[in-house]
Length: 375
Image 1 (cartoon, one colour):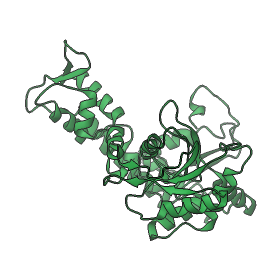
Image 2: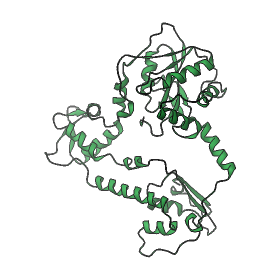
Image 3: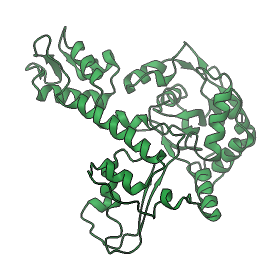
Image 4: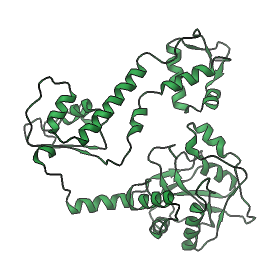
C-alpha cells in the first residue's frame, strides 16, 4: 500500500492486503480507498491473527517520555557523551540519538564547545525534558490501537465502523458486501492454505555474525511461525527438547547445495550454553552433529549472565556476555558450526565466535526473533 501513495495513480487496482492489524483506521481507510476507482468490484483484506500481541506498535514512532527523563536526569550532574549516556541509562543507541536531537532543538541541552560529542544540560531545574505533544501523540496512538482492535473484533458492518472511525456524523447504511454483512467468513482455498504452510515451513531468515569478518548463516524459522517456529516455541516454553522435525530442517539446510553452508566442511558443531533453558541448545546441537558425523562440544560459562531480553541497548547486551564464555577443548578446529536457539541481537554468538578464534565460524539458530533485540 505504501507504493500506491508514492505517485502511482491507477484506477484498476483490484485488491489491497494488510498483513496484521492496521495501526490506524484513518490511514487504513486512505489506503483501501485506492482500490476500485474505476467502479469495478474490488477487495480489501486485513489478515489478522488474534493471538498476536500488537502492543509493540505503541512503542514505535516516538521515544518513551520516560527515556527523555532518564537522559535528562543523567545530564544533571556532569556533561556526558552519548555512549556514556547509553551506558548509564540502557536507552537504545538510536533512541538516545533522537532524544538528544530533540533536547538540543528545544535548547534543553547543548553540545559543549570543547567537545561537540559531549552534551551538557542548560535547562533550569523543574523544566520538563519531554517535548510538547509527545505524550499526547502516544495517547492518540493508543486510542488508534484500541479502535483498530474493536474494528477487527466488531460484529457490525465494516463500512459503518470505518465511517464512525473517520468521525462521520451521519453513518452510511449497511454495505451488504463486507464479511459481517454477508455473514460468511472468508474461507481460503485448500491450495492457498497449503502454499502458505509450505512457505512458512521453508522461510529461513538470513543471519550474520556482527563485525566485518562475521560469516552469514540462517535461522531455521521465525519464532512461533510455521511448523518449525511453532515447535521451537512449544519446546522452549514447556521445557522440552525440540522434536526431530527441527533437526531434520537443519540437516536439509546444511546439505542444500544452493544454501549458505554449501561446500563448507565443518570440523565440529559448537553450542552456546543457555542462561535459563538447561541443555535445550546443547541437545539440539548434539543431534545435528550426529547427523553430520562430526564432534559436538559446548562452550563453558566463566560467569553468570542475564537473559539478553533484560537489556535494551546493544552496549548492555554486549557487556552482558563479554568474557562470559570459554572453550575447554584442546582440539584445533578450522571451521565450526555455532548453534544457539533464538537469534535476536546476535551479541552472544559474536562473543562465542571471538572465543573460537582462529576458527572460521558460521552461525545457525533454531529461530529468529520477530522483533530484533526482543529475546
